[in-house]
Image 1 (cartoon, rainbow, N blue to C red):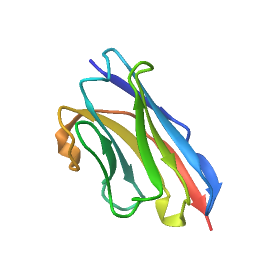
Image 2: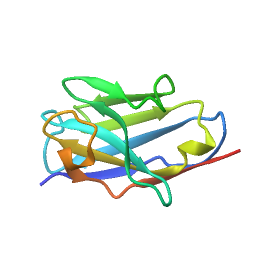
Image 3: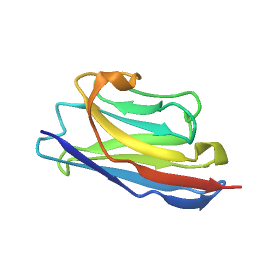
Image 4: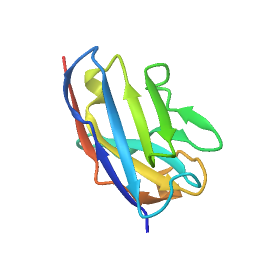
Length: 119
């Protein structure tokens, strides 16, 4: 079983930066596609970025966010720059067999970390 724990969320002003981390335990991360999703209050969970055999981003974060992974540390990161109030959400990391943008494609999820961007 793969366990995922996110950290690094917090309160930041618009234009600021945060780096989220997702540490995996129980299995090596290397075989998995790793993704970040987010969910704002009253909204559905939405795809943010994925790192696997391919790497891609949602249009809303492209050019501002960067996903990376350190398989030796069993950790995936999400560097978020030029943050906007609309980026406010709970951010989740997820692991699956292949890179995808749909939440049902992922088997393992972390508990989430809150990101709040003030205007």
